[in-house]
Amino acid sequence: MSHALFPEIQPYQHAMLAVTSLHSIYYEQSGNPDGQPVVFLHGGPGSGCNPGHRRYFDPAHYRIILLDQRGCGRSTPQGEIRENTTADLVEDLNKLRQHLSIDRWLVFGGSWGSTLALNYALAYPQHITGLILRGIFLSRSSELDWFLRDVRQFFPEAWEKLLSYLPQAEQHDPLRAFAKRVFADDPAVSEPAAIHWNAFESSIMTLQPYSPENQSTVPKIELARARVQIHYIENQCFVGHRDLLAEAASRLQNIPTIIVQGRYDMVCPPLTAHELHQAMPHAEFHMVPDAGHSGMEPGTRSALIAATEKFKQASYSASLREQ
Figure 1 (cartoon, rainbow, N blue to C red):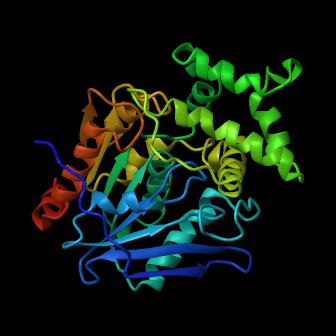
Figure 2 (tube, one colour):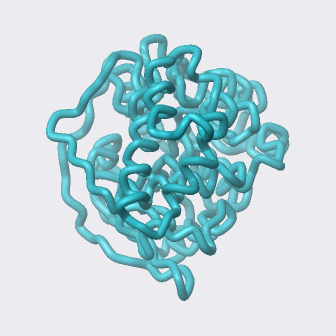
């Protein structure tokens, strides 16, 4: 059965939450104010949320909460990397939960959002009704090496285009070379470099070539996205030293979980999702046979909506917790 996106909706509330003296995060609520709470965690790191993310959830049932993580999207300061670690983002989620007077919520995260969702679940399992995870990423060295080097085996043209922006002498270490430019003080240097850096990931997102119509590039948003992402990658997303698979295996067995993975995901290859399912055998695991990384490819989108529909059933979460 194929599931379509729910209709477009507008938030009934949007606001900023000051989480430190430096950072304020944007959040919004839509759907049913008295419904089942669900929080959507965007990818990147650095990407931000968008109106399409509301449409995975039945607005008659769910209280839908979206947020832009520190430095991302509409959060301020835009592109700020000080006081910006995975542990900080986990605490922001808990502060937002408390601010909204929510005891427990469903957590939905894709790509980097799956990393953050797992870290949040490990820190606050008592506040989670379930996990929906897509395009699994654990920030291990092997995964970062894939993105920063080995993916060229499948996308040599995209890789060459990425490197072509750099002088020959710096092409051996593109992360360092782009970091130098993206963090430059001169916008004439930093913004074009950020746009070029971000375009690489966008070009390998889907199984079939995809060019969104009327896509606009806002340099300041592109710069914030690149700065946050490079900051996290340079630090292995602040979790590379941990064995998240072992932690999940020992501490998340009572969290109802659905994992959705594109078979031909070239950003977050499916081995990681397979290994997470081995660590969490109670989880439902859906390998979408005709999809890459994007959460909006038809098969992945349908599987994610099927997951949110399943979590509407109170008996579903209860039965999994009893296993």
